[in-house]
Image 1 (cartoon, protein in one colour):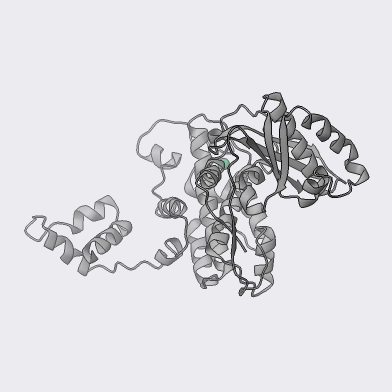
Image 2: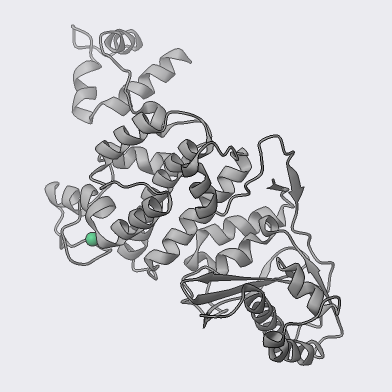
Amino acid sequence: MELKKILSSALINSSLEDFAIWMPTPSGKFTLKSAWESTQVKNLKVSWHSSIWFSGNISRHAFSYWQAFLSRLPTKDRLIRHGTQLPPECFLCLHSSESIDHIFFECGYSKWIWGIILKNLKIKRRILNLQSEEEWIRNSFKGKGQLSTAIRLLFQASIYSIWFERNKRAHGKASQHKQQTLAHILAIVRTKLIELQKNDLVNQNSICCSKFLNLPCYPKQKTAKFCIWEKPSDPWVKINTDASLLNGRGGLGGVIRNHKGHCLKWFSATVCAEKDPINLLELQAILMGIQLAAKHKFKKVWIESVSSLAVNIINNNAECPWKAIPVLAHIRRSLQNFHSWKASHIWREGNAVADVLSKLDFLFKGEDLDLSTISPLLLDCMALDSSEFQHPRL
Ligand SMILES: [Zn+2]
């Protein structure tokens, strides 16, 4: 076990050329012993190990980051150096030559993502390259608290997502806008932090971090509660909807799933929402979900929304604000298409699929598009729901 650990550590630190040099014995023969002895004369400890493979990391993110850190990713500059004939332009901006530093830090696509993250965490810093950022994170965020974990997760998730987006474009798949990529990064880090129960608020930056990632701000001693996304019984379908509001633009998202938790239809749309309250948007999202279900002739629908006010309005348990009366009238008319319907409230943690759809940069209106091409995160969220995963709710 120890040997395995050391060998893998040595491999991390070595190029193929190094490997060839340190493996043979003085007589030129390779033995397991020679490998062991070779490892004894090398200093195998690397300072960056703990900042990549920290407890609570997301392994696929850490792996991508590790590859990027060692310049092992097949960026165009590297491929060209090895003799591959291809145009050098970056897939993300189609302008500058693609290299590790360019793709992750100099490219307008990634610069924008870093800029928003740092600004919201109230960190003033010019990002330079992987090495300098790794050193900065390692020295500045040593603890295991929320902010330290969040920064490291955000950093790795950004590297992973930017590289993932670059690969999608390289393989001719539909591109994703930088706002969508950022929304995915934040959603996945948020989910991870809740799972890790990182809710300590020790200073102003932690509070900014909680607000930015929409994390619950409860004191540490609060006990965790759980919620699950409950499947409807056959032949009912469930419509989960959500709305988001950002810089005067409203996002509406929703998904229709059957008794097995399979996605039947979904939507994601944008509306101008300069002065609209979020509850009006929540009602609009519900209306859109209902209309989609009616269009596809589902007869028994269960509507779920994170807005208890919207649910109460539909169930006649709360007064409808005057601004929302036309939307409510549409909802009432559309509900007549169904044999049966019911509406209930769901906690935000159990409504992740609709939440992500409402933040998809508001570009997609085609409910017929394959979700896997839009966002792998959505598939992850749906798989969790189908498995009746208990979402931690702090
Ligand atoms: Zn670029």
